[in-house]
Length: 287
Image (cartoon, rainbow, N blue to C red; front, side, top):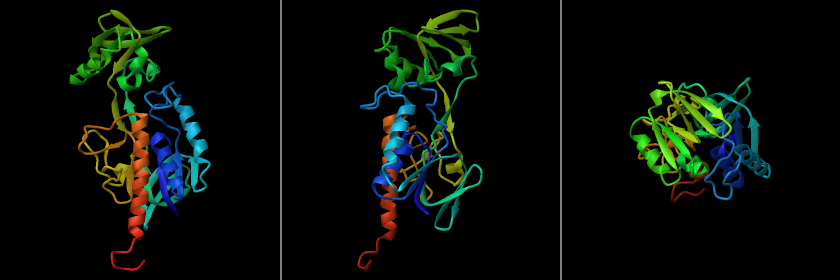
């Protein structure tokens, strides 16, 4: 039985495995190869790695994990996670099982895009949702903001100091997105067009995997899994890290590589602390 199984091979899961490996805890990292930023060519706002290709970051992390003898990495999807004995059984696609005392979920979120032709092809490239991650790349250019409600104003005000012009659009008026060598052509339902360098939209996030909810982990109105300040969920022995989880006092998670890495480390620390606490003798008793 492993001390922990980490499900998810993005930055949160990789960091959790690294921290556990450095503490000489046996850990199995399961990576399905399905990533929220899978269409992103370059990730930003990560110290010493600004502009890194996400695939390169994952590759370097895997190389680092290979140095730790208690860490095992397996490219495999998960079918189910169930309580068993004093821990959990993880059933992999195809039938093999693995067992652990504790589980760290780092399975991330999935973005549902508006059903607009051409949008998905540019997602993570010239169509984005986060100015912190992608705003600077449009500095001095014209960008559209096709978001409904108050959130649109917040995004526009974030972009104002960076770009030459912000074009506000009602998402319902957008008929199609055409890719051009130097930007996008937005085709409106009234027949008009608008050329822009890029566009910010609002995607609808949902849990990429159902396992935490199936185990009974408490969820929040955002769709995220509720955690405490170091990644414990409402189910003993189950932890969550990355953009899939956040504190109940927050409106939602901080979606960034840096935040995911930090959350992965915290969850791993929680595992080690809880493991030690379960083995410590009560005060006044010999070990």
